[in-house]
Length: 129
Image (cartoon, rainbow, N blue to C red):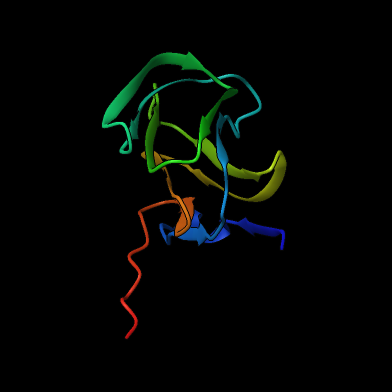
């Protein structure tokens, strides 16, 4: 089943998420302004307990990673608008994606293998009986 989700609600600060059984993930940071923007951020890979810092990187930026627990936080150097996308791939084919834009503040992207991935704050799921 192919799943697509547009995070329009993320513009209002409402988290947006999707589900996927991915084997790889692509994080993409772009500028909604029509010109390249400098941004900085951090990508935390919980499976390996490591962080990757990005300082003064120019958009568009894309990073492909194996499916693992990922948290990414990115901010434009001038504090202005920035867009983020996360794509999941299964067996080399796109399985789903989530995208959104913030007009000021941080772009937050996350991926939890077999659970969910999304834009905005991580969605906490209630335990079912």
